[in-house]
Length: 447
Ligand SMILES: *Cc1c(COP(=O)(O)O)cnc(C)c1O
Image (cartoon, rainbow, N blue to C red; front, side):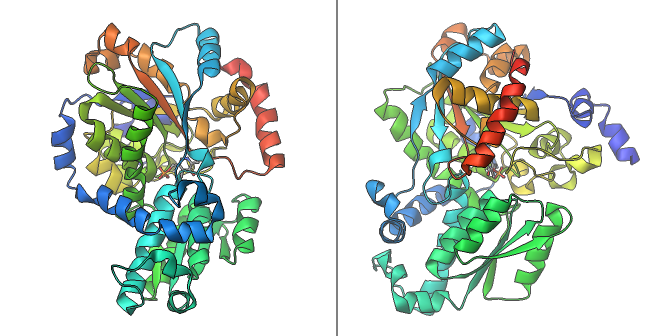
């Protein structure tokens, strides 16, 4: 180990992370959300811009993906309570969670079956729109159904889009870009799930497999795209277009909660728990939620203990300059989408004063929670989607969080805990059975 790492290990949280243990820590500053949003340096308009773009493309979605017709081409997922799981976890953990447990079902998002259907798809649309406007085949007042017509598709076919992905980002970018007629390449590490590669190929996407770790797959994709001005590379570690697509979820969630008569204000805080890989999706959602709910919302990131990225970057202040590998961790995890060792520098820095807490979770627990969610609520998701499920209890038990937040018993009793379920509906039945079987064996760990 290098001397700098030795120094970092003097921090007990970093030392625990290096041992692969579960950790939790909370931001101690008390910058109000409005001020932190300003200091993020991000353009507040990016959220509205993304929402408007998604709206422009809605008619195209209806045409191209008929399953989106029931929402007139807007890709959205339901929110609902999970009271049986709440009760079961209260019993197993021997602690009653104040407030109500809810689940945001991004595992059900149409087209891509994961939260990546927000960011990944938005970036593809932004790029396609730019290509079409530049080529003059689309005008500002056109109905974007036009993207399904031969002359626009002909223009699209002259351009390419490429991305490096462990799986879900590739699915969302690949399926959408191929549907638009763009030449689409997805770079994956060779150990990525074979069903994801097969699915992409069935959509006409070129899948390039790279031996070695995922970072190399991304680097190869980036280098190839850099040589060709007609190819756009989706850069997971630095993309504002991805970020904006995630942020666009917040206003819609606010509407959903209002429709369910869930109050969110200073007296009724909202706690949101977000599985985190490179940080783009939880970061974008957090940014959007703070814009909408200000100081009434608290956002917590959940990462695998064996592969902390944003948690490590934020804790050390080194952001993208440090990776889980530097701590001697293998980075191996069952949680697809969270197997990212190096965080996005963009998110870590811009959101340092907005993210309220960082937690890491063992793989065995994610598997067990996958089984428990199925048993209690009959909901099947991929293990990464469960990373946030235990955090409401952890955050509530954390005396340091209580002290930092200054929340009263009454506020906690009025609180809403929303766990973001980030993926799962496209997992083939045999893979799902295997997750559930493994998970049942680990159930005793949830206690
Ligand atoms: C990608 C992904 C995440 C995390 O998103 P990041 O932008 O990488 O932080 C969480 N859950 C699932 C299922 C994912 O695919």
